[in-house]
Picture 1: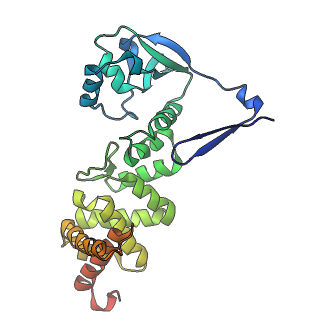
Picture 2: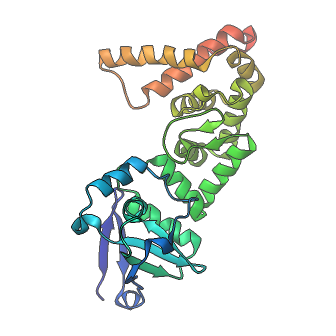
Picture 3: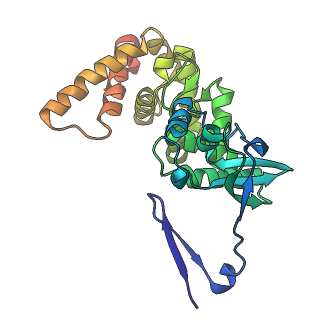
Length: 282
């Protein structure tokens, strides 16, 4: 029996289809549609980069335009892939070539968007996390709900951070999977109580560093930790850690987790200075 093997993406996923399964594969129709008919579902798409759309418009080449990927859902035509190209030509083309998928669910659209964009420059881990939430991935949905319980949202476009917005939700998913739900809840509880949504406390470095500290000291009293941290600006903790990371780099002993370890060590030092003498960490 013939096997079709197809490798895609960084993870080199392999899809094996038997001859019978290949006979059931549905392909999209190639059609010409008016740009005026096409819509964008903002819930899973990236934000429009107007500069990028203008560049495509200014340097328009029909040979390089390609085909938009479109899904017909609930009587509407949604652009799954090609938003910037559509925006670039909407004012001067009456029709654009489209690969039209029919009968997809919203979740299936999200899956296609992620597959088509995951290897392109600009689709970072935050965007991919949001796509997995839209797709209904149980772990990603659970993490998003836990963040919400503690008053946090997450950045779905890039790694920049704002107050009450976690810039790297993928890191929270990693903690959820590796350390468990209680560990993530504990991390967010302490962070919220100590720093009240301060954006400097919500970077990946700070959150993973704090989680490293908590993982190494599972039996420590959380209230003592909160009282110690609430007196310190998270910027100062990051500055101290950065100093030691630089020292590591000079010494040639740095590793991928160096900055997280130094954040954890800085928090340990702060805790030992502020916490009860009988509860200090050796």
